[in-house]
Image (cartoon, rainbow, N blue to C red; front, side, top):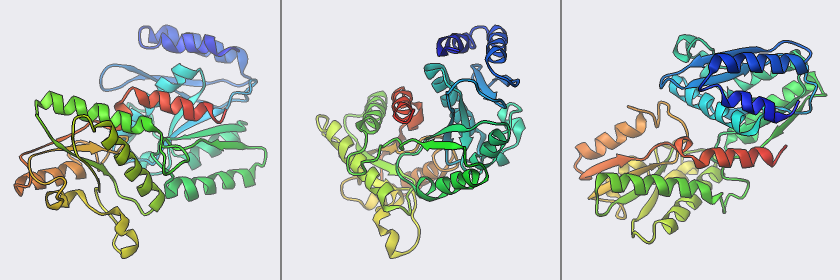
Length: 335
C-alpha cells in the first residue's frame, strides 16, 4: 500500500468524516491481516480528530509511531497531543499515536470524548501482544530529560526482554542532541510569539522572561539557557532584554542552576519594573502552563506585589506552525 492513498483518505476527514472512515477501513482491511479498530471523534473546537487503535500484523515495513509527552492529569494536554499526532499522521502518511509516559491514563475518558488516554508501557505491551514489532518513539520533549535518558529506555528494555524481535527507535528531542547548540527553530517560535504579543498589546517596549518548568537535569537547563541566548539574538534589533527563569526548582545546592525563579523576577535587575512578557518554554497545557496554572498564579502574585505594570504570557510552543516541521524532521531522521 502506498502512503498516498492513506494520506488522501486522512485529508478528507475534516470535510467528510464518514466517507474518510469507510475509505480508511477498506484500505487497511485490504492490506493488513487483522482488522483495525478506527475511532473518529469530535473535540472541543469542532475539528475532527482521528486516532487509530491498531491491532494487526503489518504487511508493510512502516513502523508504528508514538508521539510521546510526559503526561498530564489535564484532558487539554492529551487532546492537544492527539491533534499534533493526527496532523503528523496526515502529513507523513504513517500511523502516529498520541501516547504519554505517565499520568494521562488516569484521566476520565468522558473528558476525552470517550477515548481513554494511554501510556507507553501499556500501549507497547498491547501492540506487541497483537503482533506488532516495529516502533518509533518521537519525544515531544524540549531536551534530554531524565524521562528520556533513563525511564523510557527502561520501558523499552522490559518489552524487548519479553520479545527480543521488537525494534524501538527513539528520535532526538526537539532541541536535538547538541545541548549547547539547540535547534534554532525553538527560539524562532518563541520570537514569533513574543513579537506578536508585544505588538498586540501595543507596548513600546518590554522585557522578556523565558520560563521553563525547572529541572533536575543540568543538560535540560543548558538547553533552555542556550535557547534564551538565541532568542536574545533574534530580538536584538528590537532591543528587548531576555532573561531565562525557572517556574520552580528542587531544594538543595545541586539544583541551584535553576535559579533565578520567575517568582523573583521583580528582583532581577534585567527584568524589574515596566511590562513583562513571559515567554513560555512549555509545549502543552497542564497544571503548570495551562489556564489558571502555576505560571499564571506566579504572574498574578508579581502584579499584586507591584513588581510590574503589566504581564503577558505567550502561547505554548506546540501551537506554533513550525512545531510540525520540527517533529517531522526528528521522525524522518530515524526512519
